[in-house]
Image (cartoon, rainbow, N blue to C red; front, side, top):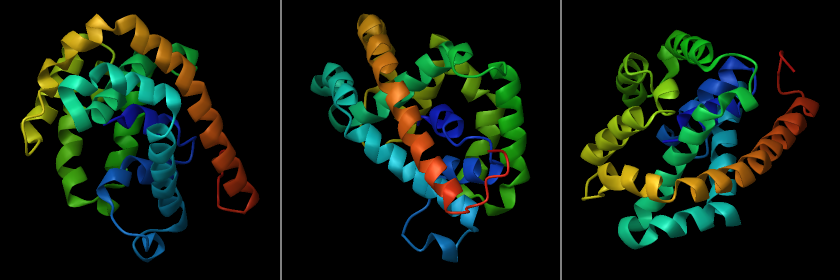
Length: 205
């Protein structure tokens, strides 16, 4: 799960960030019946990020490194690998230190616990205690994340073995992330800018 990217790409509005964070855990299109406008927008932003990512040619190139061994889990692994590079290169994208940013993010998510889906409420303490957003940036932390994900899959995924593949193709994955992520930032900024024009509340823009 590329939680760090989704959170970062939400901008500065905490309700939009919460919506973006829970996007994988919310089904259906009747979002405004379940959430307020800003949270619903964050969920829609999450879905747009996923669609854009899945169809980007550079991301497809990254998946090709993994497809023979991991098949449809390749997309999940690339999400995690890209969060690794975002965490490692955080200073290129934000003036706030990652440790501080992560601490503030966990506190924000906790403050909105009342609207989080039950599965996210169960996930959040593990995410906070193990400091996923920071630990994505080191291989030991990434291994822990991938092993946990492998244990939760219905079928054998072999995701716990994928650190070896990351190391094998490390330079290629890094180059592909560096090509792709600025495109994704531009995509999200355009969506957020249009929402701002349409008077969706964005107090920090």
